[in-house]
Amino acid sequence: MVTPATASDFLRWEEKARSMTVAELLWSARDCRQAEAAMRGWNPIAEGRYSDEACTYGDELRRRRQRV
Image (cartoon, rainbow, N blue to C red; front, side):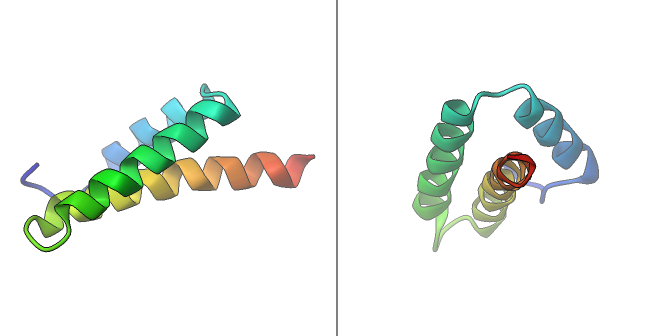
């Protein structure tokens, strides 16, 4: 990954998140956080993209919890 996340990346992640189950959201967010940690210290752009993607999944989880 060479470029920071774009608005279209966020739209794609949000659309994907809406169709995922809670288990899939949790797993994907955890996977992104692990990838983010693996990038820390040597690829800050990839680290940021993984962080942004994880946050997008977390936002969807938060929205669902607020509806209940």
